[in-house]
Length: 261
Image (cartoon, rainbow, N blue to C red; front, side):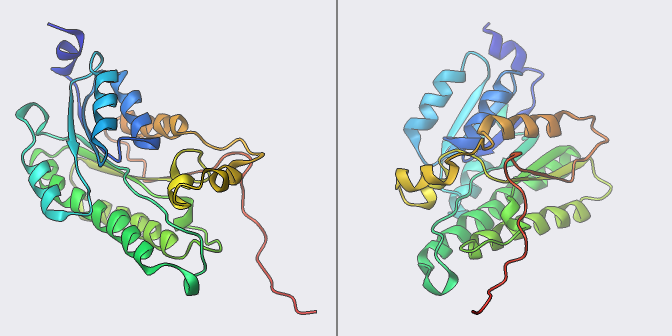
């Protein structure tokens, strides 16, 4: 019997959305080091297969090619997990994106729809399908990946920031609903982090995306994965409600003032 299978008998089952890149892939690699069982969810089958092949000697892995915007497909896929993966202990709601940085009056409303459908609705669908099983078993942990954009406004952050503010308040309300149950909820709020995030935001313009991080030492996906790993592994009676994290080179600016000459 291989090592992953032996360790998997006592392992937690961790479902990660947006597992094909960035924070999601880093989380998969970090939890695989512990031999946890992984359900990796993403839209890109080849990337899921490559990650599964990379980690299969460390963990038992089940992959799902899925767009979390599609509620019926989420319900079907998560409702029919293989028996060995069916009791999800940790849901990492990582899938999300930003599109564009135009001011609200010039933004592409289809980009707004995509952000709302993924960052809000997709997160809701995944949570709603898996939460009853956690309640029935009186165990579980929901990790929601928010953003400092949900706390602090910036030009062009309009709907993206609004979706992440939803993630923050939804996390708080989940905690209120789950009072008295052994289920934890944590909202992780990263600031500037160098991943595919900006490439997606600027629709493949790598030069423009690189400019976001020029001259900085930004957070890495591995940094966020370590933070999530820590939050999951504190003692069961401890709930980390919220972690806001920025690179040392990032902080808040003064209030903006438009001065007329």
